[in-house]
Length: 443
Image 1: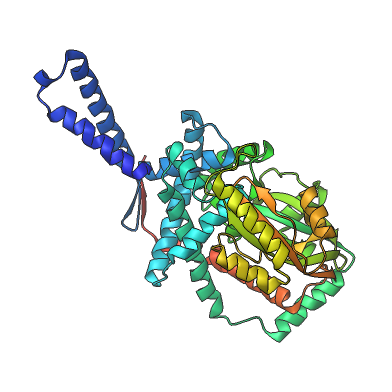
Image 2: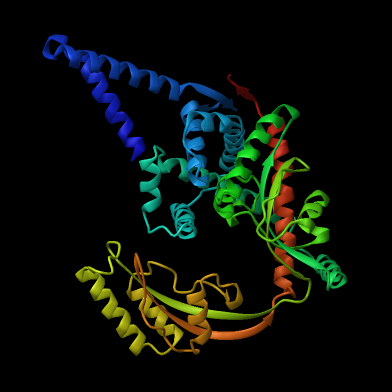
């Protein structure tokens, strides 16, 4: 919406300039001239060149949109002082993204619109927003949805580039996996950490002051309550960004020594100070801690049917559509007897949300009411309708298994090795691209 609004305002200002002054009252003449001048100045400023990356231009408008997106995502006030503090690091980030996009295009990588839509949906889900709310929120704060779409497009395309790069090495060999298994067995009983990371690269010493100012701003907002996963997804330059910065469960020998030293001393939920690592700085949070090889858990497989509302629910005054959805939820709860039936019912309801949300660890449920519901729900039995502001859910437990999640499967070990290779490939390829690039930054 923002992208469409600007041309219309510009057209009105130009039209006012072209009208004969005699057709406007004196006050209107002054306002029209001032409006046109301000609009022209704003347009000129937004179009001014900040950097040229192998012939591709980054404008001040690009930088401003990304600064505003960051401010909004972290709860910062969108003031000139705050935006100025973000400028240097955001500019470096956009330069890196251009290099990644150019390499993706060179390799003929195509990102499907469905992948972009899913990434946006994931952001809305993490923030408990109904579909479409993200675009409205950004527009209301002067940020075009295109800014977020462009960022996701680069992230997804770069992931495909790295998969191509790593695929050339082939899957980890049996010897690689055996080595991982041996390392794991040697660590049994030792501490293991669930870590989130935001990585900020520093290509040369001249970038260090700007990077530190940016990181200090990030830490300040994280400690004030900004969601770590949201900030990481938008601004971490590690390949874990699309997973909200989640490194998963890692052992001591898998962490940078400087990061390990901090993680070992920090309480769960804390946000670290900047940690200097190879290639830049990391900010980490400790999600959880356990002993290697020991993590008993109750793991549920569930299916849900989601019946969306067309408007937000007012419990004291439900609409006819909301009443109709409630009746449909009651019928599903009374008639569906197995999980394939739940999948079929969700399909009939439009698949507004996936029927299978993935494995659920009962002990990790943060919502006490949902924990109690799932704990008491028998396998193959549908729940009562569960109303929310934007719809009604019906849930069924398909299986309930007691597992030791502290012992990784073979596929999990393969995935861990692949992730390590992908991260290494990303940093090596970025260094190569930066070394070969022609980058002209403007003051």
